[in-house]
Length: 455
Image (cartoon, rainbow, N blue to C red; front, top):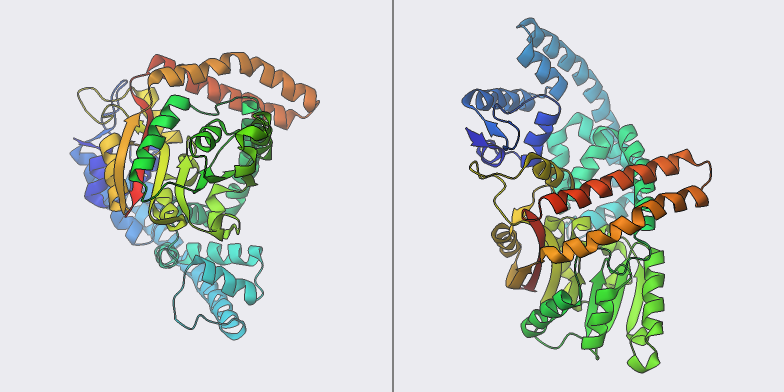
């Protein structure tokens, strides 16, 4: 019997791929009893080997399912469907030809031959391609040759999680557009819920100061230029400004409401503290930092992000944030980790905890694995500590008071807007689940506060 992680490693797949196969019924683990983690038998491994073989041959997952679970005639049907699909791929190839010819005839190719995401996007814009043209091109490329599309995106040095997002959209643009619309409403309600919270996530002044001490010792010089990503309403931003009196801080968040809260808090402390003049708030998306001229204006001595690293994804953050730092610059961040081994067959994580982590923190590590990945991505861990569970309980205590007020507020501000109300109720249910899960299982996961130095 193999765990999901070991089986994925044996076949060179990602853990999320096997979880997806389980979800759609293509490969269900033999061992999946209540209170236990997924365990795959020899028969499961043999079935996965056939899935991988058929996938390489170009069969869709639906086609593979029919071949595996139907008589031999199912293979004939699947092959006939594949032949029909090839005809469509030929038409797609012809469209790709026209696309490339138009690009070659209209754009200035980079003289050094170096191609990255920014250069590629620039070439398309110069050639007159709209954003919709680019989306359709990706959709055709993904439909024709998923593996070649993947290799092309990797050539552009795009982080893995962004590649996954592009390919998900390309494989089903109508579905992804609906998801985008739902997600936009969900995020609007999420920001609304946390309005007025001093801390938008677990943590406090003591933790910020402890990490700041590590950062000051690790930095090549006293930090004078700081980037605070996902600052929220800025409780830790104000602590940084107070304890680094010569530093200027660029505080970035996607919510203007939160930034206004930070500006008001800094001004309320008075000009004597000098905080307001040293804190510049800026609205920006953490996933589009490389296209933001304010963020890209100069390198930083210190990047700080509490409770927001998951927005970028760990691998993308570790890969890209180093480029915003001076040599030897420091990153201080919090990220979700397991505090016990969730895959231990003798005492694995409760099923509801594992499912929650799969949904909201896929690929979550224990502390050692988290720091090992940081080393692989070119960082030197300086120090780290887990967030005490008391901080989580304090944070979730705010939910008890806010939840009923939040739903009433949405009804009052948007009378008759059933879509918004449904989104608010859905979010409330998620937040209740999250709160109750931690109160029930407080010893399984937490935040790791890590301080890393750029090599």
